Amino acid sequence: MKTEKQAQSFEKYFDEDLKYFNQDTLRYYCCSNEALFGEGTAVRALVLEFPGLGGGSCLGGSMENLSVYDNPFTRRCAEKGIVVAYMFPGPWSWMNKGAVRVTDLVVNAFMQKYGWKSDNDFSLIVMGGSMGGQSSLIYSIDSSHRVSACVAHCPCYDVNDCFSVLESFPRTFVSAVNTYDMPLDEALRLISPSFRIGELPDIPYLITADEFDEIIPLNGLENYVDLVKKAGLNVTYMRLEGQTHGGISAEDREKMNDFVLKYSKKN
Image (cartoon, rainbow, N blue to C red):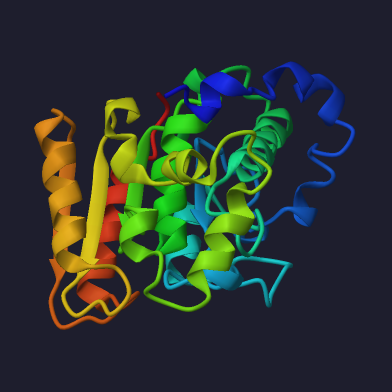
């Protein structure tokens, strides 16, 4: 099956789209920790955090405060010259082709802002939980940029396995892909990481699963992780003991943060 990345690319429009996505308009599309940077801080990395369904986050991001992304992790990153941006690609986006386009344009705007000429000038880390975890995996595949590392916390690994877990899921999945020019079954596979393992880039992955997740089937997610490992990719897997969907202990979150910091270096 032809992938959506192969079927349609928006890269040819990037120059024209600078009218809407540039260093002066970034605040419309994401919230960052840049206000926490000390004077003269050299910026070396960009971390994108994707929201869960509805716009919330189990990792700290929020659409409630659009001025500055301020928490212990983002302050730690600011000290090291790492921009952390909480993305607003749409509450039901499931990293569809529109969300990929918006995210690529945000990265382009950051490149413009910091004078990065190519992907070699900075590292790009993606992370998120639930829909945000699924988004991190799909964006790693479909981005026009080179992703350096990916963190997927309790990700929706397969739309079909999770389709009817919540009454809200079917309409959100279909809403994400209903403009794709193909049968819905094929379109839904394009936002299902389990169908796209062969396209994952050769980068480090941190994937977590909550032991008592009531939304994402634990066995299915662990089978997905096994398949990714069998594909020869560098995967760190963590089963988060005693946690329900989206939960993470302070100790495990620190391991996640350390993973992000480890790979937040220039390529």
